[in-house]
Length: 514
Image 1 (cartoon, rainbow, N blue to C red):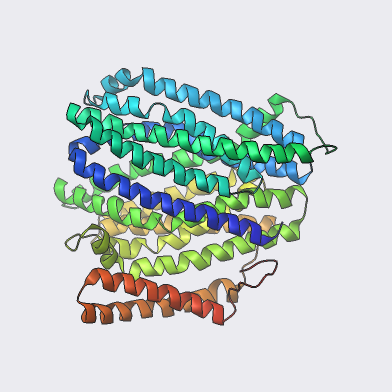
Image 2: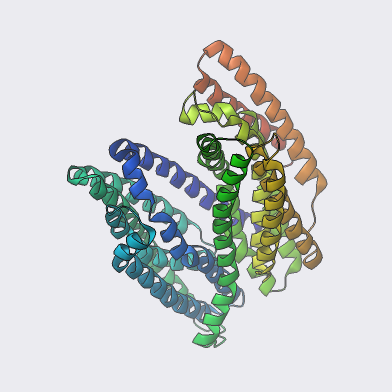
């Protein structure tokens, strides 16, 4: 498989992910106006539990399934690939049913144990069917990613989000007359409706591609793996990936406790500390996560592509794919990082209003886009070569370093910026540890000119053009929002024009287009 194929898959997934994020924004704005802060609180309460219940099926299983299926297909074992999907589908179905039953019949228990408002019951019940359909979607997505066909996954993400928006908002408007609790529960049901539609789209796509594989499997090699062997292999790969995701969520919770307590110790009031933390998580982190959609898509696309080459022992091809993936990630993440830093305050004003603060936090946190993206891409490569526990180890090391640095800097004049610097140091550590492992195992190399010098030069020129073009447009137009959008457009054109002129990227029909 050419590098162009898996890079195309990454761009398809990233585009769908970005569109889904924007649809999510359009969901929350009218919902906020309809049910206000109280209703949004009721709407949001069940989601941490929902996320934990789905951590296995949403994160670990699709990666494990795509890896194992790609390995079977690389050996020409089509029937073996189908059996892996069938066994995994049943496993995910069991997880989905169990998660749905926990939410559906345990809603009252959850409310009593956690001392939630009684009206939260409707939000939990409204959300309860979603795990069942999400688990089905995860199985199909892992299957298609194993085939290195990303379009069905992308389409299902968009359809799922459209269903969530349409059904969630419509039902909330219908049930608002019965009270805020009912409206919040109706909005939560949007997630269940969206998941059903997403699963339906994937099922239709599966019928189409399943027939094609059935037609071509005659006479193919078949290695008879027992069901127990398949279950063990799936869990062996899915478990560490899931643990890493859960660990990140738990550390986010711990981080919130530490940040607030240390700010209070530094002399901030409860209100002041909460405002600073809200600016970090509600604005800066939200904006940072937008460009990271691409690196997550790149990691998902790399796992089956790298697994294919690894299973065939084509190590030169494997290195080419790994280096192409890493180079593409750098080329996308670097300008996103600098762009967010240069226009940090202006972008926050554009999205939240001219009086909103948080630009100083985003200006520093934006630097982390490059390091998180690099760490995620390298993690996908490691998972593709069966080093699934290495990223978890490196994550733990990075988190410990982050907590140490954050604790030291939080009590200085840096305050909340201290925890941002701690996060940057932690992810730099994770990225370097991942790279060092790949350097030893597959001799992964960095082309200094194409991956470092030229992208950095282009990004610095872009940053300067963005800065000066914003000042000029703002003085001429006197409308900050238009000046911000115009500066962003100019920056994109300048950056990619430089890369094209210097030959750093090319759209010629070659083995790799970057």
